[in-house]
Length: 291
Image 1 (cartoon, rainbow, N blue to C red):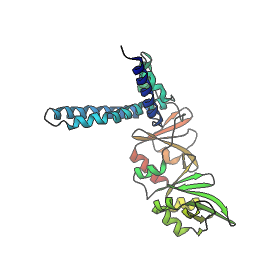
Image 2: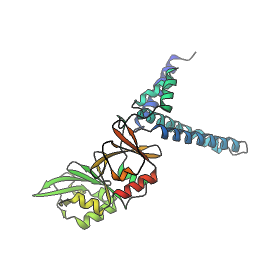
Image 3: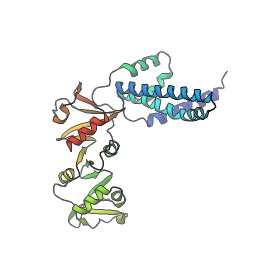
Image 4: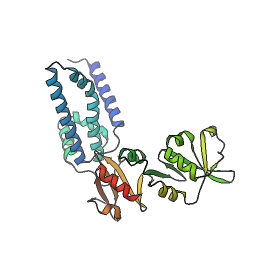
């Protein structure tokens, strides 16, 4: 019989591990993409271990060792995808605990594999990191990202904070952040007037520029930038929510909004929303068309 203390320790460790995975499994994945990812992972695992075992019989056992070392990472990704699928159904990732409850586990397995996504947006939706995504789909530096943040804004990774100082309206940013993006740095130094920083404890590490009229329109036009507001992609002032969905990108917007740039794609209506799933190349083409 197992020692009760050891049993309790195992439960606590399992909960800690699951808690870590849950906290690192943001976002959601639709049923179709869930099937694709799980199938790809399963085939990859079978193929790897088939090759590893065959080679081990021929004196090359290093692949078995590597496979054993990599299994915790693979298990992490496997559970992570399952949790994101639960999010897609608007369930907490902690519902994965029911995997270990007889009969109830079968119910949740069936729901994960076969139930449709919850309509529109749910509690677990997270928009894509737009600036990073432009790099991943090979559009940066030809296409840039402007995010509107109230009176402030950011261009790519450079955040500009609105301030009033010496009778001027200025935008202040970190000199380190500005140096990290040559496109933004070169544009602002060539087209904006530098001015004195407002007093602060880190004043010497900041750079300030005088505010211009219609500067966002100018930046969007000259930097070929997409506009983001509150996590939504703006297309002709229409708000489009974009989330990562496995190997694809899912776009969600209100069904009564007609958007010319999206009309040529095949969308589906879910509740009060339109849903459009685009592959990487299609999403890249869309972004190129709207800037």
